[in-house]
Image (cartoon, rainbow, N blue to C red; front, side):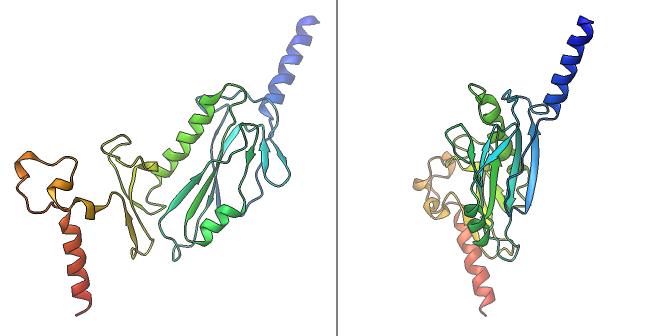
Length: 223
């Protein structure tokens, strides 16, 4: 009888853990992408309570990771993407509602990360979620019009430390391009941090081709 009672308690505990409630924040997001939860992720924050929303947008006891993606229409897209990690003093996530909508209305894709709180010492799960969001955006760069990326995260390949290794962004219609680093600051060999020793006599660097190509394109169009 005692063994049967203990087995029943274990079964009840398992059912309770597996039925842990996950909430969805009421937003106008165009897409919600589920990354993982404590059962499927590499790390867990050991949160056993149900997720809970207080007020309009304070999310407590997070145990599941989702990306709320606000995507502007293609004809309005600037090609920029902003990833937002809500604050809340590690007690809750103060989920932004109007800010990602404002970004979307201005042609910027906004990604709000519903991440797992550290729950008194489990920061590895929170870090996993932060990296996971970045990896998702990197793997979907084409979808979000990220048109150029650095070879890897560290210096000197990514001298600016930009998120997702972004080197350039373009609007969906290709009429606007934003670049980093600045090619106009690398026209002459002496402006470059490194330059091939056998080419130090160059009058200009190969970066000049960007401006030549732009000039030739405009000259062709205005004939």
